[in-house]
Image 1: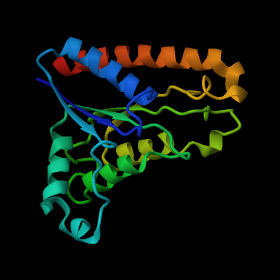
Image 2: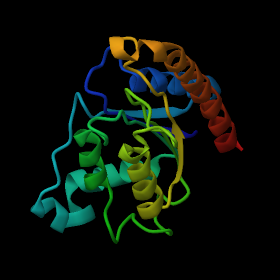
Image 3: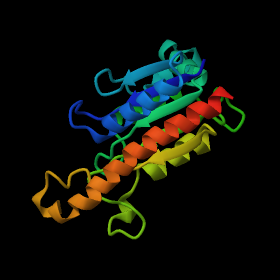
Amino acid sequence: MATLLHLDSAVFPQNSTSRAVTAAFVASWREQHPDGKVVYRDLAADPLPHLDASAAAAGAEDTLRGHLAAELAAADAVLIGAPMYNFSIPSTLKAWLDQVIIVGHNAGPDGPVSGTPITVVASRGGSYAPGTPREGFEFVQNYLDKVLSGMLGAEVDFIVPELTLAHSKPEMAELIPLADASRTQAFTDAAEKAKALAARLAT
């Protein structure tokens, strides 16, 4: 029985693209794994404390950090909703990363998370794709790829719904067709990637 650890971090529970796409991923996963387990954390509704000196010094011996690290290590796959806020990830997601990554315990190529597939839904209001004017402002995929693969040795994959503000910003009206296409593709990717991952873990 495979376990999926699902994290959401979007501030607003309604009209959140990242939450909608992660929900589609979970639905497809459950279809393949009706007896599987999904561990869910809503980091916006139930935020973790920022890492302080005592917790950093305690490392895995700290009750919270040890629990979070064990929860991550027990997951066969991880799903993270990571909308872009001010060109970067939500502070609540950064707090989870600071708490859960423990050097000397689970960081490194031989750690318990090494090889774990992590799917990140990196939604954003505009476009930061290669070749766009704001390509250099993309610090969500760049950061998460480095920290999750570089520090934890995880296998990281991204689903990137872009231009999510096109319907609410008049100045972006001409981009609505591109936004709709990106959203449709994100839901397709979520369903297909979840199905493929579930099948892979079942073998």
